[in-house]
Image (cartoon, rainbow, N blue to C red; front, side, top):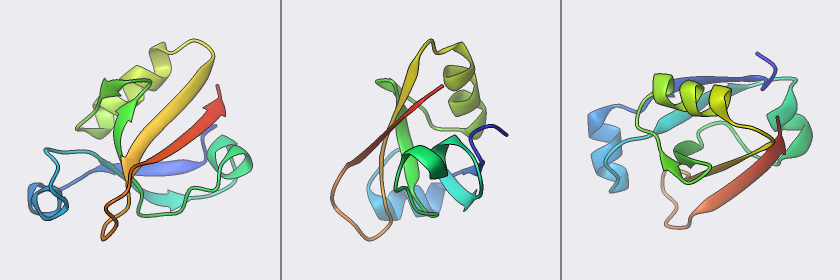
Length: 90
């Protein structure tokens, strides 16, 4: 809840359309660390957290919970071929 975001595991069909094996979609952004410290938008699909691949919302939560210090989210937006990086303090 401190992150100010809601996440859901990306569906297999959507992952295939994006050319990835899986990820975690940001479905809602509100007040919190992500909104305050990054310019991330809803719809972003997280594929790695601190260089650890995540394919489910549970994996994402586990990696963030265990992290010490800052968090680096790596991923992409549907319809975009680029990779985006968002960092924020834990």
